[in-house]
Image (cartoon, rainbow, N blue to C red):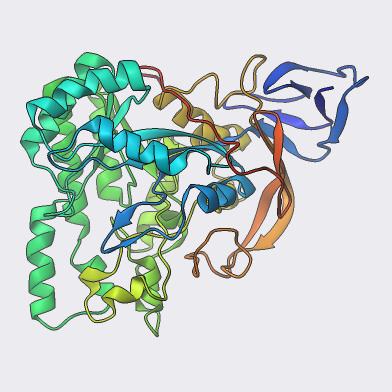
Length: 463
């Protein structure tokens, strides 16, 4: 017996049309009008959109950082993701200097295996430019199914690498079918500004943002794009927070470069004033790049509308306010960077994008699912509603309303940067490889259901 989803409007990255969707086993077997329901479970999608499950290309689960470990592991994090309409994540496995990429990947496999509730893939960070590290890149792509590698231009003495390492990584990926991702902030300048700010006695959360000015992101983004241009390599700029960085991406693409940009929900609805909340509440918004002045939101939204930014990730990196963010109560530089966003990623994009009149359901699907699948080698197995694709399906109710709150979310963390925001649009049902994993507020899947998904080699795609 299969599952027949009836009466809904199918929404893909390119089309909207009325059709039924038949799931048999773990895959979609048919899409068409008035499919025969005999012998199948019938699911009512009336008044809703039937779309491919969301793909979150940017998560940090069970990750050590800033003297602690993220509050969400692969069980709690993927539970929140599923209930928000995401059916596959791509998490970052952290490489450490002097170690092998294979060891880093094995560590993250151990974190996820048997815990993940939905499917997952991995990116790998690059911590050094040793010949041994570069030599591993083609093997990781060909044998391990990881096609993307991240370099940090920030977090000096922790994650930051130099331009030589970035350039070598770009060259290796250009040659072997990999995609380099970059955290673009000038970490050397930030290091100076942080020290000067603390020396002046400024310790509150807002100084996290003031010591990481927008010019640091703009300069680093421009520099990374130029390095990719010299190397003849594609580049994916993560968590774009500002007009300055977004413009650098647009300019690169005008020169014909394979440059792709991602932004995140926190940059669309939060702004600098959130850092000034009383009673250390501003610490919730300490993440990097920081939340910007409000006018940047409109620029980012316009870039999404015009498809000058190409993917919508969460950058989920959750820390409790109590006991974790409080590590920096007397020194903003010691506040662990990150926010819990995996559960509300799609709701925010729908609310400000679709309800805000900036995009339709097809563009929502492109940004939240199909484009990430194409960029990270998962399409058309993921990110598509076609016969033969994995039955990762979301029935999205555009009229359902809720208020976001840490009291009701399903992530394992005591705060939410979208606290109190009313949103319209949420999943009615979520299916992961044919298994119903969410129904309204209830998680209906099981621990360990999620499987590792190998990525195909990267090739430039027109988005």
